[in-house]
Amino acid sequence: MNGWEHALIGDWHQALWAAVKALTLFVTAAGAFRVTQRRAIAEFTPFDWVTAVAVGAIVGRTATASDTAWLTGAVALVTLMSAHALIARMRFVPSLRRLVDPPLRVLIRDGEIDERNLRRSGLTRTDLDAALRQHGHDSPRDVHLALFEERGAVSVLPAKSD
Image (cartoon, rainbow, N blue to C red):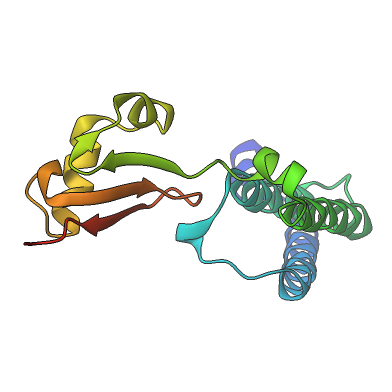
């Protein structure tokens, strides 16, 4: 096989082992995720995102690296998933919860926007206006309370109509 054929095709034995390692790592990761808490992607915390990306990196790297065995990748996966489970459990300890979950922030109270909390939440006025429209409100005046939830969603409670 000449240079370009080897660059495109490579060694089929190595490709076969990569497929076997990818499959076994997928099963390992699926099993690890099965025993941990389930969360919807929309409700991921930063720790959840880091874990998901790291799991993908471990599976991808281990499957394609000829110098990395399945056991090495599996140990890395289990260690990562254990750390994630520990951090998820920290949420139940009040003094540690703030380290894991961002605090709830009031964005609007009785029609008045709290600009400081809006900035602290990483939202612009345009973001807030879009969230209000999604909840069926034309302006902050229509809102009794708008909250930036721990999971990053905006909850809106309408003003009471007289």
